[in-house]
Length: 192
View (spheres, rainbow, N blue to C red):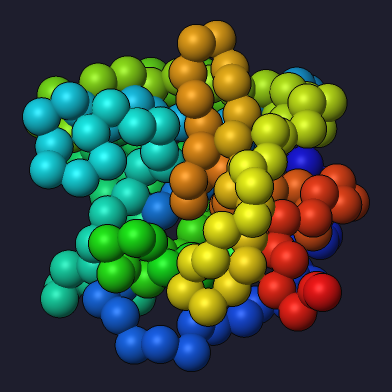
């Protein structure tokens, strides 16, 4: 986690060149000797991303002073994570969703020894994935696709019967490449 703190301070943030509605998610790591990433399975009845693995988060409310506040508020609403237990150590570059939302991930360290409770209307399940799983298990990468003018290979992971893919997998891979030198190339933009 020390490496995470240090490298996030030097993260090369790139904003999106398009104006889109904003949302934010929290990438919460349990700060313990064997760190774990907290993920959710979204409720089946939702209009978008139903049943998908995601980080806690959502759209920015007008009352939110900034996107970090959005990520913390949504994490409290969706999984009961109190703000005072989270140390936000940085943010990653925003990613556009296929629904036309600009999603900004915030990386947080969470003290161990707390209980999370899923909000039934939004979250079916909360689960933890050891950081070492992502460090030891390279993602599956799709054939190249065009996405917002970029040529990408979509990453996905399988963990205990759950498929981690889409924006969630992109965010994880962005963090792994920057902080832990994973060197998994998924952006083929500009290559012949």
